[in-house]
Amino acid sequence: MKNYKLTLCYDGARYRGWQKQGNTENTLQGKLEALLSELLAQPVELAASGRTDAGVHALGQVCSFKADTPLSCEELLSRLRAALPGDIGAIALEEAPPRFHARLSCTGKTYVYRIWTSEDPCVFERRWVWRVTEELDEKAMRRAAEALCGRHDFASFCSNPHMKKSTVRSLRRIELTREGNELRLCFNGDGFLMNMVRILTGTLVEVGAGRLSPEELPRILDARSRSAAGPTAPAQGLFLQAVEYAEKSPPAGGNIY
Amino acid sequence: MKNYKLTLCYDGARYRGWQKQGNTENTLQGKLEALLSELLAQPVELAASGRTDAGVHALGQVCSFKADTPLSCEELLSRLRAALPGDIGAIALEEAPPRFHARLSCTGKTYVYRIWTSEDPCVFERRWVWRVTEELDEKAMRRAAEALCGRHDFASFCSNPHMKKSTVRSLRRIELTREGNELRLCFNGDGFLMNMVRILTGTLVEVGAGRLSPEELPRILDARSRSAAGPTAPAQGLFLQAVEYAEKSPPAGGNIY
Image 1 (cartoon, rainbow over the protein chains, first blue to last red):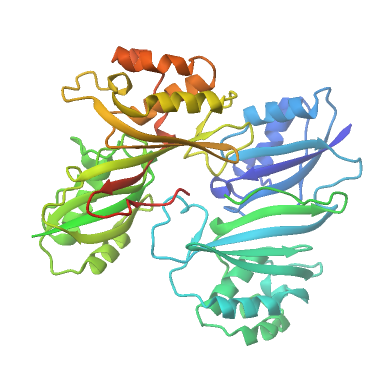
Image 2 (cartoon, one colour):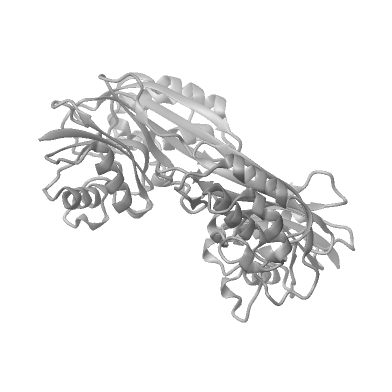
């Protein structure tokens, strides 16, 4: 059995998220496992760096799987590409060390959240952005972002109320960049809780709109309660951009389009 | 009655092209005239700079219409934006001189054709590009493009066999630019015949793929017959980028996304 590392991009609109459910039809994991199992004529189980929610996109999701095949990575990648639907892309396939596991070996992730902040039309971006037409105070958002960075208990930014494991994470960086009519929030950290990036984004937008002050962020973190934070931003603006592993220096990932 | 100039962008995928047909439901003109007539409570007829084919997109289509309304342009634009579906955007609305007519006053147009030339996935671009995975000789394509520029009878590049008016046009510029995995063909001219940009693109791709030599272009032009040229490239890669009018120096138009 060889161990493989597969880097994927996908448009999440049509899927109920990464994780296989009873009905595998509409999940990315279900779809990809079915395709790989057929191509390789053996049951294939995929481990991803993490689940993405329904409607969330990926520019560089990483998965691992074990399989026994005489096919070269190049040949398998080419067959996989030919079989994939238009909204899933295989960026790279390589053999990985035997102990590599997409989730367990992961040392960090980068997410990007795209906000369209203008009254101008966003016809060609409409599926990938959250449209916020209130005026946003980016300076206040930056101050709030600073307060969020660091090692904290992010329980207030987790939508799973039954989370039994630790909700402590290191949020290394939040970068706000403006690209024309778009405000992009880029989050890098060692790991993210359920809906964490979307709740961080929803909370930062509350700050930008003036309904929360940046000074309230420490209190919101301390509350360790989902109800203390802002709303969950919609899935469609969120992209898993890159996943980091200790073995390799450049993080696997794709470009923002 | 005031005369208005409206600049639009649209994702043409869902429409049977610009021009109203018996069933107005699925045409851009039909949709827009219905919306404007309702907003202005009077019958509105739209003249566009030209028809776009079914599936063709626009970044800067220009239309004109006459209406009698106390609404300011700003107010009307805002109401129109609120009423438009997500795949049509109103970029600008302004009052135009009484004799301005989007088609008759037009002095030039720029189209962009986007070709995805890689085996790499184009998940987020898939709706806006023609995927050509054969290797393309861009130098040969540039030589062919040069042969096409100038004032010629483009009958070989017109898919309307019943065209009674002149098929002579001035093709001022064809620019090939590479943006990562994408080859963009930019066409500027005083006017374009039915499917002309798509046939020019299909023919340039034949040259790029080595099935036609750049030296054959003069013969193809001379033939004045559709069958002499290459195939019609698919609609989905084509964007009407900008329309030029003599009155104003910067052409109305939008950015490529």
